[in-house]
Length: 125
Image 1 (cartoon, rainbow, N blue to C red):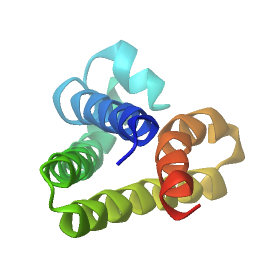
Image 2 (tube, one colour):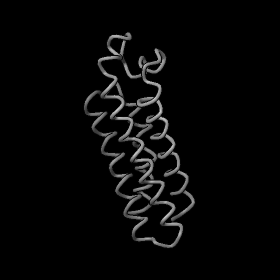
Image 3 (cartoon, one colour):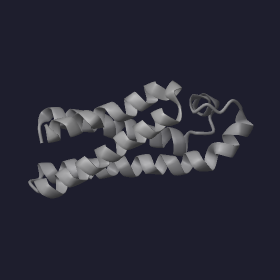
Image 4 (spheres, one colour):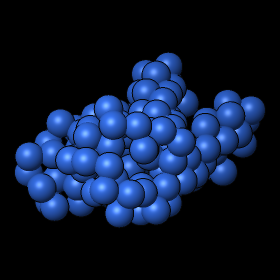
């Protein structure tokens, strides 16, 4: 695993941990739910369960990538690479779905998908 891969995998992990915190722990704060395009508390309450669940997807992706990096760096390169590649591919796929769903969400999709896409590019090329 190269230093550049570690850097971009770490950025991807941090993004997904932040998303977990926002979606699962802090979602009902007005500054947070507005970021996720809920206009008021009533809309946020309707989206809260979905956001909570989505946050845990992000937590598990971040955890999988982190464990993969640790295992890879400990010398179990096949297992570690499998975890890192899978979680990064999952992250990129989710970013593409977000972009497909709403092109105005191109910035969040870019933040979510570019770092893991770089990791995949470095791994495969």
